[in-house]
Image 1 (cartoon, helix red, strand yellow):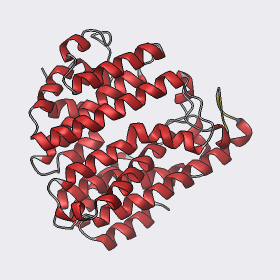
Image 2 (cartoon, rainbow, N blue to C red):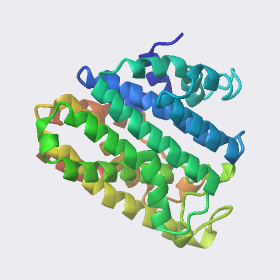
Image 3 (spheres, helix red, strand yellow):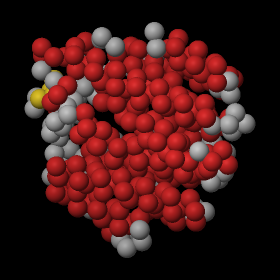
Length: 313
């Protein structure tokens, strides 16, 4: 049986780097929350399930987290034992992840459980609704359920240990939601080449989305609108990061790394027609350089602003 940290690194090497930098007990709480959300993602993204089955399993997963359902019973019904995806691996080990969740300090368990339940039920609502996004408000509603709530979850966890977050709670909660929407908008851009193949179009019709992808004569317009939207959200994400006190360097790094990766991904996606045929990725050497530089200089707000400007070009 893999350890939680092994599950984390199997599910996402990128997020694992930041989570491993967090101080205890926050590190274990964020690790557990991340893995719980990956179970939700597995159920939402599963290509072999009908929408009603997805919604039903997501609701059952929410009941597991509030103590009225059984992880053992649910794990036996979620899919084939040899499914190779990282999310499937986490889902097959959900009993172990739930046990870790039950062992969190009570106040953290309450925060994590509430937000993961709410996110899972939001995913269930969208599974039943289907992939028809009329406008930006629909996109924001979907992204709030899968990412905006994660910003709220993390902010509430940070507030357990950082008095400055408590003192600016309403502001930080709003910025945390924007942070989540920014990262998720970048995910939409990265997935433009593949999402339509599974029947999900995250580009609103008002941006040029249609049943089979993005209208050929609106590709450039749709991409420009998505990039501009991501940049607006990420401006708020930078405000969130610099509001965290410098002495909480590990927490700042945890937030800073995905922000910088998102900024760079936008830079290489802007005006790049290749996003409609293949996934655009940052080179591994550049990822390593960003991580190394951030670990050394991420305490500096002026460095963050300068680096974000440089990576955005």
